[in-house]
Structure formats: structure tokens, C-alpha cells
Image 1 (cartoon, helix red, strand yellow):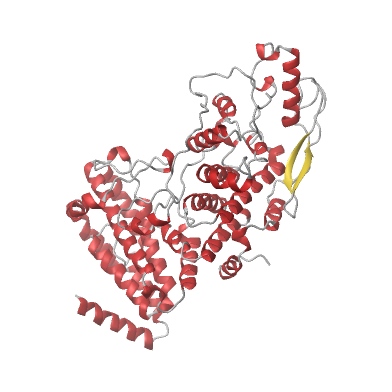
Image 2 (tube, one colour; image 1 turned 120 degrees about the vertical axis):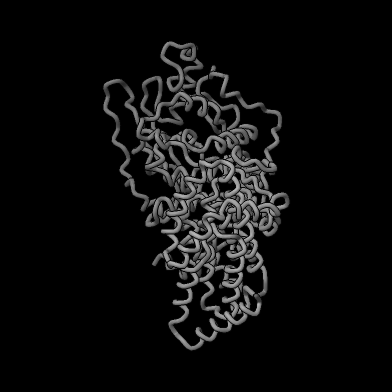
Length: 566
């Protein structure tokens, strides 16, 4: 077999040397003849290994061939939708994103590798001939994928067969990713290029294929692995994600995904310096604060469909804090950089209502224990909050994060040394309220600082309730409410201040009008004229200087990807 491959590679090399048009033809043929993901694993293993061998003597094809391989792996990756209750195999480590992600792969190579090929061949023997026929006919992968999706629907109803198929797909993905990781780690990968060239190729593939792919679980770790090679690679990757988030010309789903990628990367990369953690964290906080200042007056209720990017960025802030609160508090003070974040939590966007409940609960628990923010009263109120039908259909934000624990047992050997596992925060003795069984007995509190003053009881209790009694307490509550919400139970119209950022990145306090009239029957003040578009916000974001964006490598990368702002 080795002699056969040697002759084949010699022929390909000769064709490439004498025919200028051969490279593109060969790439198209290799893509067309790529073994279908349902074929036996040995065919895909041999095909991928030989494609990587072509790169060694035809380096001009490096990016294109890597893109073909990674695109095929993405098809397998997104097909793996594992239901823990449906897989009867040895349990794995239950630690998984502090129970944020409801999907935990249950395949362990050490226990099942020996039996995978047999089970796979049994379950797929009837479809191998059909798949080969499709491949010989030269049909494109999309048509094959559609046909197999129909087959998958039939196999799902079979029960045990679907389980074996899922495990077999995970085994294939594990082995193929292991081959790619081994290639990237070997001197062969940089035989005709530098590590920087290789990284730029992977970033281009990430930008065009991986980032737009919904819920890819494993393939993106190729970039995670390469980013750890040199500090400038981390700068370039985070710089790309930052620009994707703040530049409004990108599709909303791309910006949404970029925010989750940044949060997950900052949370999970143990090679990331504190300066990068703080820089990305502050960038996202400033985005949230500026967005609320510019757009809150146009909001009547939480709407993920309309403000999905904002909610994704807000969830990214909470997620970063849950993982990195020790570093953030050490670098930014005891409040962990959340001093101005209160106005985001208290805004009419009401992020705690729509963000992923596990993220919100963990963030509330940590900030409550550290006496930074007090979110439990808001969460309790949100349980009784009505969302209009149109907005409530999809009001819950997804809890998926791209760099969730990597569970493929062979390939994870390359990831584990670089990865931050989740370690639950140990409380200092403060017991959080039981939101499921306890009703509020105090007015809605401020969430920032220790010994918080209560807000207006009108936000929680009906008129005439016991919270409205007590002249001194009611007056203090109404004053606190006026300072935070711009209203007063005593009938005095007040303005609140909102922190926004100047072009230089320094906080500036601006007065925002109240949203309700001061007396029944009086006219409401005119809202501040701010365009709902993100153009002003984007300009402010670009005026900021954070460590990942300041590095020369980020500008070089943006130039190569054609995204440098002129």
C-alpha cells in the first residue's frame, strides 16, 4: 500500500510541475472525492493523511487543502447532537461548563475504541454501497449531506442504531482531529512556511467556515491550540473577534458568535496573560454601557431577536467574570470592574431575564458572595415579569460557548495542557436566597455595593401595602429610586446620570431624561436624540486601546483578511 501511495504522489507532483492549471483542478477533485462521513473510518484516515502529505511537496495548496479537510470535519462535528440520556455507555467527567451546556458526549475511546469499528460496520454496511455510488457519481457534498440527513431521520427512530452511529461519528472526528493536531505539532507543517503563515491560514478558515457554523463543538480547538504557540497569535485572534463584535457591517449572527468565542477563549485559555483578560473584559463592558446609554430609550421590553448582539456581549461579560473573577478583582479592585455595570443590569433591556439561567445564577451567586452586585431581587421580580408573545417566543439566550470542555479522548491530549477547567467558587459564608421558595419581603434593592438602599416600592409592591408605610423609610426608598431610575414616589421629576465613554475612553456622566411624567397628567420629557444605529457606538469602540488590539499582529491580520478600516 505504501508503494501505491508513493507512485500516486509522484504522479500528482509531476502533474503539478508541468501544468499551471493543475493546482485548482486537483483541489476540486480532492474535495469531490473526499470519502463521505458515513464511510468506514479507515478510508477517511488514509485520505486525510495523504492530503496532508500533498502539502509537503505542494505548499501552495496548503490553505485550500486544510480548508477542504476542516470543512468536512465540520460536517461531522455539527451532526453530533448527543443526548446524555440516550447513550448507554460509561459515564464521563460530569464537569461541563458548570452545568451550562446540556450536552455531554459519552464516548470514551479507552473503553469503546475496540468495538466502534465493528458496530459501525454493522450499522452502516447497508449504506456504504450507496455512499460509494454517490461519491463515484461526483455529486457535491451538499446533496450527499441532504440525502444522509434523511437517512439519519430514519436511523434515529431505530434507537440503539442511532446511538452507535453517534459514537462512531465521534470516534471518526476524534481520530481525524488527532491526525490534524499531530500534523500542526510536527516540523512537517512548517517545512515550507513559518508558524505565522500556518496560523494565518487557520484564521482565514476560521473566519470563512468555522465562525459562521452554528454550534461547532470541537473543530475550533485547532485554532485554540495554535494560538498558544506565540503571544502575537493570541493578540491577532482576539483582535479579529473584537472587530467582528463592534463593526456593524458584519451579520448579526457573526457578531453574536464572535462575542461567545471571545468569552469562551478568555475563560478557558490558561496561556492568556492578565492584561488580555482585563482588556477584553473592559472592552465588552464599555460596549454594553455605551449601547444602553444610546438605545435604552427605544426599548419597551427585552427582545433577543432585535438586540441579540447586545445580549450576547452581556452574557459574555457575565461568563468571563464567573471564570476570571479572581484575576479581575486583583487587577481592577474589589468590584472586579463592575462599578459601572449596574446601569446595564437595571436597564429596560433587563438582561438577567433573557440570558442563560445557569450563567445568570452563577454570576449572581459569585457577585453576591463578594458583595459586588445584588441580583437576586431582580431575578425574583423577573419570575413574575410578562414578556409579550412575539418577544417571548425566543427570549432565552443560548448557553452554548464554543470552547466548552473538549471530550474527544485522543485529540484532547493536545488541549488539556492549555485548558482552564471549571472550579466552582467557594462561598465565604453568605447564603444566597432561595428564589424558588421565598417571596420578597423587602423593597427591590440596589444591586451595587454593600448595604444597598431599597428602591421605590412601586416597582414591587402595590399601593397601600406595608412597604409603602413608614414615612422615613418610604422617603429614603423613593430618594434611592430617583437616583437610580430617574423617578420619585414623592412626585418630583428627577434625572439620572448614565456613564458613557468619550472618544478617549474616559467615563463621562450624561443626564438622561426620566421615562415617566413627574405627576399624573403631565407631559413626559422629550427623549435624548441618539440614533438607534450603532455607528456612534462603533466609533467609540475603535477609539479604545486594549492589549489584544494594540499589537502589531492584529493590524497585519486585518490587512490580510481585507478588514482594515481605511
